[in-house]
Image (spheres, rainbow, N blue to C red):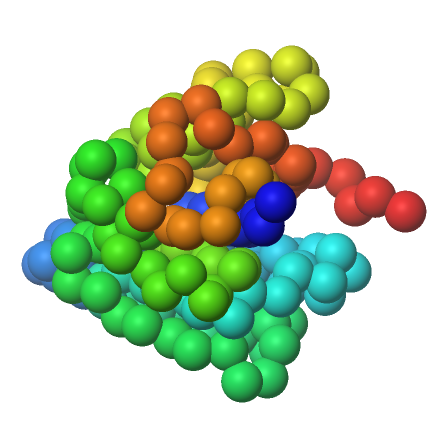
Length: 175
């Protein structure tokens, strides 16, 4: 059976220092930039290799992508998708179901609460303590790795994924 791999990444911590900025235009905060540096190391160490990155066009998600992009394989495709900005879990799932089937590994960079809800809905299997931690909270700059025993993205279904990893910025590095 073919498998699909999905990485869900919540954007890093954004700044609220400028009250005149629209939500869409908020940049990363200094803590967000630090968290991205740590995440970049983890992505390299774990050899995370999406061939497609779907990213909300909001500034904080684009800056998160730019901060980690050097840890991803050369030649991956980036798609900025307007529909990912503050999208519901249902909208995110619909977007994933439209991915071309020849793409096996995808990273989606988005926002809560939709991203968190989607991760919890899809993670039907995996270590119980990891699933409980994920259910409790998806903090900024957290990465969720799910695997699905499917050959077509349109077959993604609730509780069909195995939670392989849940990495939060404050987690100690393994190794």
